[in-house]
Image (cartoon, rainbow, N blue to C red; front, side, top):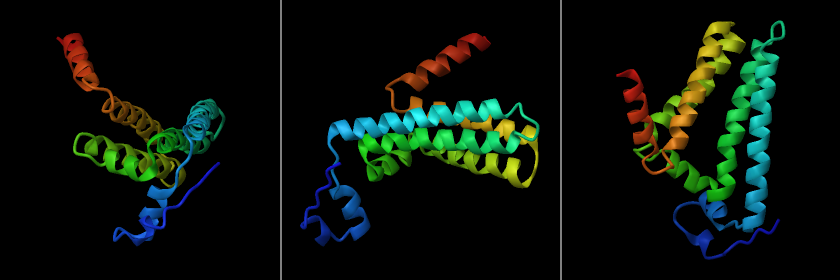
Length: 157
């Protein structure tokens, strides 16, 4: 892994933390490898969590692993576009609502399973996690959301 720093960036008025994140550079192959590792870990954790759901008292493990899986999958894209750009894109107006719902579902899933001890609510929030992650992901594909809306409306009519 190769990291380079530009001294010019550190004189920026935007802060040293942002400068470090913007100044670090990974090769495309390294970014692609870490994207794949995080994405595969995310899928593995989600499947593991789903399998653990069927164990007695497995709702807590399900909620934790399913949420970790979604977070790992979401974090994987940070390696492709960088963390600062990822955060900026997450909170653009086109995906703001999906991002907020997705993050709230992460929190509420864990609360329902770990503190509230409500199995049905935890499963509901996991379903909402899936739906909000899907809607969020579709926002990166041109016209994908419109196609899904048209498909669903034609199925309902």
